[in-house]
Length: 93
Image 1 (cartoon, rainbow, N blue to C red):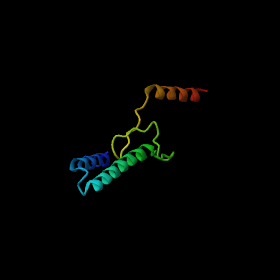
Image 2: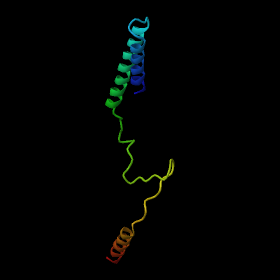
Image 3: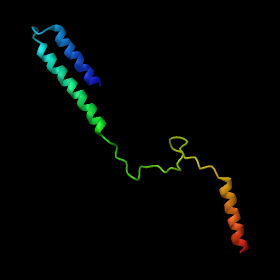
Image 4: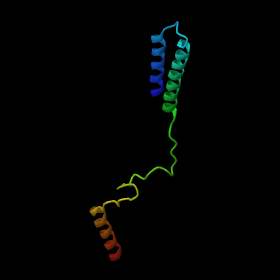
């Protein structure tokens, strides 16, 4: 949007100095060029889609505690109790 605004300023400058000035067409062409370039950048950035492969996707179980460390998932007491009960049933049978 900076390019677009710069183009608007050049167009305003061209109109302010008037048609009779020698730099009128230079400022006008430069202004339109900046406006078109700014709009083209905006459209191209909106069309660009990030490429994300399966390797870069994080697991839904990933919990980040910072930039380089990973917090372990909190143990589920019900799951642990069920695992103990299953082990005791396996041992008894």
